[in-house]
Image (cartoon, rainbow, N blue to C red):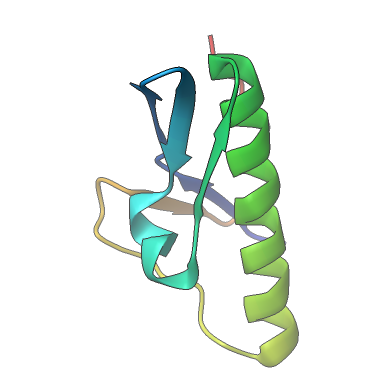
Length: 81
């Protein structure tokens, strides 16, 4: 099993928060929430859905740019603080 980590951007957007994943943006990896935490939760869900669909379709998972995606050959847990 491989582990991938994707950079996400969560930023204020008027009265809500906008979140997107640069490496997967062309697949529609963007969402929003009424709080920063909600937007972060939503983008995690969106990224998971996109990766699941790419895997099911046999499409390669984007591995770049390097500052936006990291691939590991072992299992890991990501924690954001």
